[in-house]
Image 1 (cartoon, helix red, strand yellow):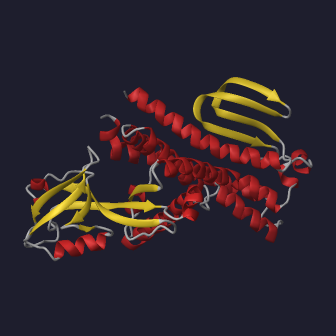
Image 2: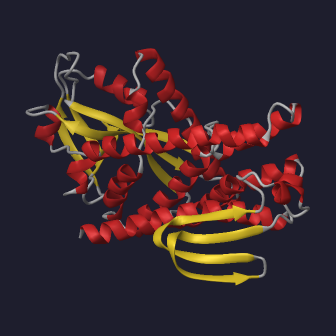
Image 3: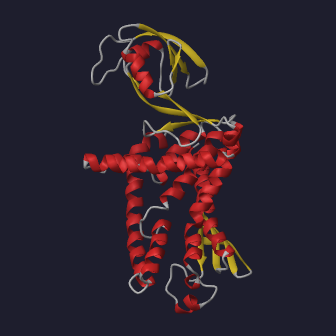
Length: 377
């Protein structure tokens, strides 16, 4: 079974990374910059063929793809002087090539989200890692997602369990976490009727439960730990026509704000732990893929779309050797080309690559111990 999980993970990761590299490839081709090589997977090569000026290849290691764009990411005077070379092009052409991968990742997400949103009747749901967030587009309601149930708690005696979603209390629909807390606080010690979506059957069930009359710091009225499940509906004609774009924008905005929130929490707590615990490398993505794969093909497609957005947004970070940093350097080059030379850029990117390799190794070890129970389950 683990071999099947690994195969699915490799296919998903390869698709998302390949889409990114196709963005750089098409950015170069559309602007007349020569592409020396475009590869699917990484060496050793098991197949290659030169078509026109570009060599196309398939590597034995199935991890996405790569480009070799003429005169980019190398110091070569001959290539730098060639009209077909990257260095002879202006700012906007270079920026399009640098950001082509990000653009393609977002376009790919738009395409997938059109399929998913229309197929779901223009209603989508998403587990949130930051609370009190409102998506820019669509009508949103937030409901409590059960993450843990305390022993001998009112919730356990009522039959609530992990991943159940609370829909209403005493007939009042829950549309926000604040409303949920207020209803509980106003019914301490009372018997309430609670409707929830069963995580296993996805049916709405009703139970009666008597809340605790007193709450403590670590034990609430129900005895659950809960997260935030957001439901988004695109109901107007305009929303429906643009749902793929709107849903993609929603999650780009959410990703950026979530990253900012996590960085802010780390600064406030003077600890890297909040940010580190929310970041995942290949091992973490494999664990998530393994869980999602058990839910079916539609959740897997949703995961691919979210990963495509994640790779796009991550590549915009101003970390040397990433697309965002390359684009920033283009702007600095416009200001003063004598200071911000290609040689300087290459040196800075080498440092950035070392940092990214170290970060990747740290993430592998962190993810292994964080997700080992899921990986080997």
